[in-house]
Image (tube, rainbow, N blue to C red; front, side):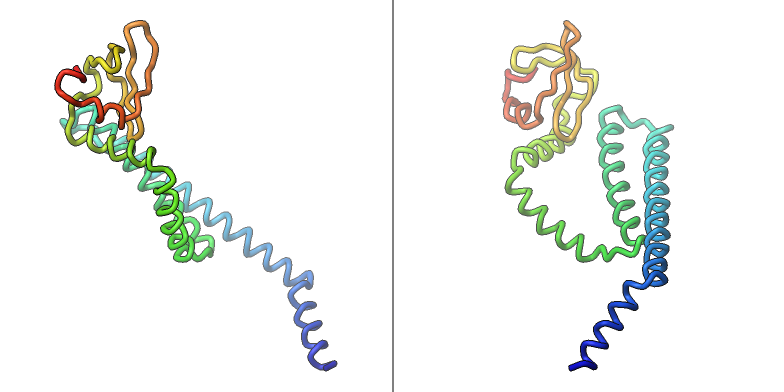
Length: 178
């Protein structure tokens, strides 16, 4: 019995010795700095890609805005996963957990997902583009921005309306959306 307790005590002493704790903290510091450097690189790459994505092409503003938003999200998500992996964190278990959590959150946040899908449909169907004059729910104004969640309209009196994309898709019947 004493041998068993002595082996446990020796192992705990080796784990919590100053030298062992110093090595662990130094490794942690290096891993955090590497992770920050990888994420910073991904962030800079995302900004560079967004700035140069449509520089000399004939792509309209609506398409450019939409693709830039998707590109930013994808590149930053990839950068985050790469940074965690470079930091020594096992990302496969995290990604699996996020997949399961995503399904759960998806059912709980069906309105947000509905707006996201509606934003995609507005982008693909193009009932209007940035700069068009529209009337929605009795408000008349110019489309300022179309995001995945909402469409922003600036009214004649200078107010900005953020209309959820689901409402716009539901109003897209002949004669309602002008």
